[in-house]
Image (cartoon, rainbow over all chains, first blue to last red):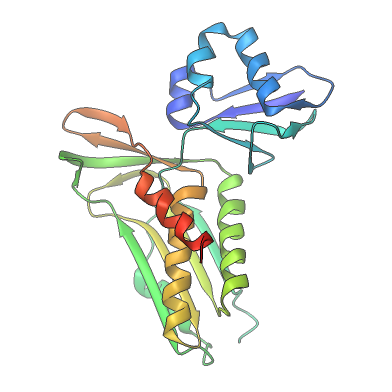
Length: 82
Length: 158
């Protein structure tokens, strides 16, 4: 099981701040994204926006990064703090 | 350097902070450092031609602190710094309220100015905070600015 978090404008667009991916084997970030879209087809547009950033275990990563069961995955828009 | 004040102070909070208190913390029992550079960011009443009433700041608890610590660690690798404070507020903020504080001490001013700007530049593009503005035309998530990305990129080419 991978815990998945969404933040800010993406969280609002999906109307979801947290979900889970039932996987027992490592997957890439890109595969995780496709699995999420498979179970929530209406999320396709928002989740394939190529400006989105991804973090695994609270570190920014690229789409080919491997996510393991029990990892924490997060998708969010470019940051705007400061 | 005094041992009872940690060298890094990284805080995420909803409450306001006192600029003077923060400068005192950077300076107290610290006689090695001749330079103290602070930056404070505030909510302004205008953005992209719209009247701004206030904003809401969201963050990614846990990752935010890690990300800021990574930025401070990188700054410490580049310059010999004394104390570093980074405070960022979250939640609802009104016009004129303080959002962010970055304070750096070191022996000489050059490194203190540079490190302070470096920390702000990377906070802007790496730390998971998001601003939602309340304007006279409703609420709107801010778009990231390419000028901020470019500014952080400039440090990498140095």
